[in-house]
Amino acid sequence: MDFEVCISDNGSVDNTEEVVRAAQKRMPVKYKKNSTNLGIPQNFLNVVAMAEGEFAWLIGDDDLLIPDTVERLRILITNNPGVDFFYVNSFHLQTEFVLSYPQPFDTMHLPVNMVPFSSYTKNGQMPFLDLINPKISFDFLGGMFLSVF
Image (tube, rainbow, N blue to C red; front, side):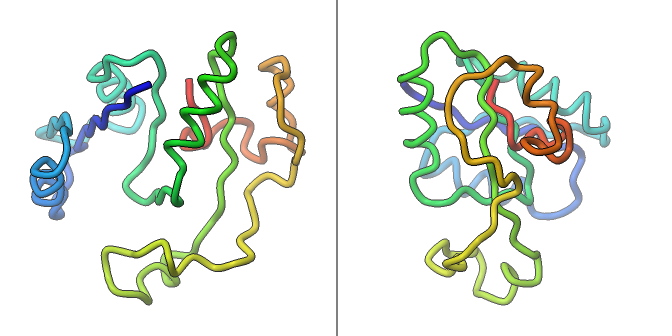
């Protein structure tokens, strides 16, 4: 299973475009810069429309993938061909912690005992609406970075 990186720059005024252009020298990245901030919902729709794959995972500019994340997700999708939505648990790192190290942040500095957002430990298939349970998803699936669909 291949993956692609699609970036919809929602009118940012930082160095996003410069970072993307540097990344494009190492790997294919689809990039579109909106002339104005369209708001989160429209920007989400734009970036999903850019994608050509079967699944989409919306990751924000403040999200960090831990080592082997993409490979682990590939295995999960491959081993569950009848599933069309995956809830991916996540960890929270304080911005101050990440910025206390040289940038870009190297994942070798990740804390050993990170606490996941959800304490729910069962893996496996379940009806979609069962995910809307505060014991599983504290924000009722509002964190798009937790959803691969």
